[in-house]
Length: 405
Image 1 (spheres, rainbow, N blue to C red):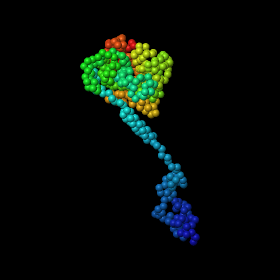
Image 2: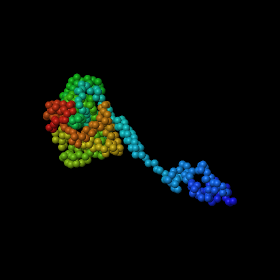
Image 3: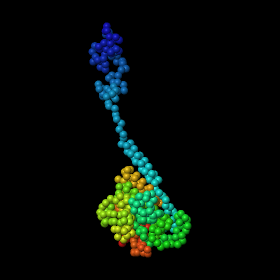
């Protein structure tokens, strides 16, 4: 008799099968196959199946310790889930898209679409490319008395055109053409944009008189009548808005060819490269008494140089992709920029990038060809050259016409 309960002993488990011989062929077990009390062992019965697995654990995995893995996750460290590259890219795209859409609608809501070009009468046919009429007015809108003093704008009521340019954008490259405000032109018969009153008689006078009489729509009509070019879009900015845009981009670098000092505009510059802030920039583009050669013609050249430099500095990745520069710049410009009702942000962007191309040498800038003086201290256009120039623009050809002044 053994003293172990349930029949346990050193060589048998509780079910009577020898531990040491489990899984060992009967012929290798020697006398241990006798079982209990010398009776024939179960292992001697070739049809016997104990129903127990030999050396494997159910659900385990072969090849672990002692030939099996009882708990395959027991010793393995927990796996860290890392964000997939695709998920990160999609998230960034969604964020960028949301930011772009939000910026677009924010900027679009700020555009002052106040000019209705559909009421302009007797318009010429549409040519190739796109023509913008860009106007700098002497509007003091929004300026305090101190700001008017600081900017040397004076306090005249209403507003007049201080500068006018046609920007043609097409396959032949952008062309920027200044229209001197003293140009001697014909103002054709027109119907008042607000009064509805019709004026039958045409007038021979300075170009800036058209804007003074009936604003943007009559100016567009006058430019179209005298050039034969259809104006597709109109953009106008006043003194205050101009200065704000320059300050928002941190000033604009200019290379001033000679010393300039003019008490009327407040210009006071030494020759050489320098960064102009908003106040200095305004005095530079308005100056017509010092360092401009032929007065109004010299001033238009300075205006072209500065506006092209401003566009070159504004339309850059460092401004467009930086919210801390983009929003102040767009806010300063769009709040004061008056455009036509059909102007889209895309068209406005095209205008700025075309001006940048002009500055980089990919386009052309010039004055409207002048043949000589005209009555009342005005300037007469060279009709033959103007006709050739406008035909080239109309057909979107590379401009070969030159201006001698």
